[in-house]
Image 1 (cartoon, rainbow, N blue to C red):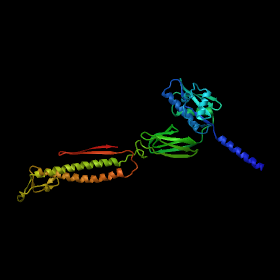
Image 2 (cartoon, rainbow, N blue to C red):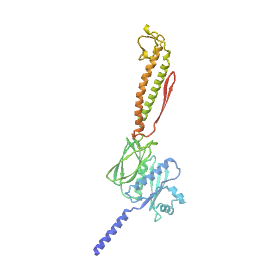
Image 3 (tube, rainbow, N blue to C red):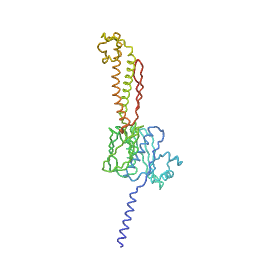
Image 4 (cartoon, rainbow, N blue to C red):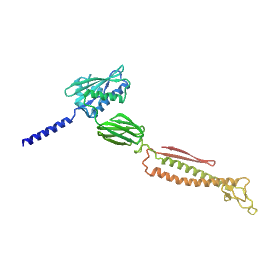
Length: 381
């Protein structure tokens, strides 16, 4: 019995010890403050340094875990606390408000060959500065190069081992080009709608931005030694679905066929009115003496020419025959195009193709006069 009690007590102590060991102290990395002359270049370097240190904490293989709600700026926190310097007492109050065990903060100053970053680690509970170090940032460094300097600086400042075991994230997208962000850090570009990223085991927020499309974000968990595939479907700005900006081609086809139908119909109508109004003015005569008293009409046409046995010295019958033939040809063509228009209208507006992202409209204004016929066509999509 005493032996069982001892084993049970040992098990409880082991479990408590394991739980305590698993709970890492929290750390907050405040935004690096620029001193001296502030310009866009130095502000960008300070931002990249801050994000580089924060991303190093997120890797999870160091001595600390990133405190929640710690995405704050040093200069803002000092103003809120009325701190005129980075004294331990005032900085400790800032850390308490955030709810962190340790506070990392620093300043960036210009030098003759680039910048100098001074970073500090403060123990919030003990209200004491644990460590401080200076880091050189060479002139011309930017983006990933600055973030790499920041990650190494963090590791040198707090220790905690080398790189964490990594996994692979394979990204595919319906857009051919764009920028991939990992926890809001610009990581790489999409090439032909694909990107492959190697990341330490952890949970990340992955986002893709592409011109003309809405930003798409996902939360993913990268496991060491494994490959994870994620698909990102971006929606075109102003679009109503995930079609990635693909146009419904039936809409412009419908517009063209509708325009052709109206133009042919207009020409057919004009030619019909024209030749019918001139039938009574035909002064042609039959060459057969027995029919000299009969009236010649459009029934004596042979296509676009006059029929046999008719004399038309003034060309009045020939003119009617030509316009009558034009009326027949354009009328048949207009009827055929009308059938095509009905089919394309169905494909454009009533069949759900799932590929349209913008609206298409067509405006056709016919123009018919006794002298000419035509139409004005306007498209928008």
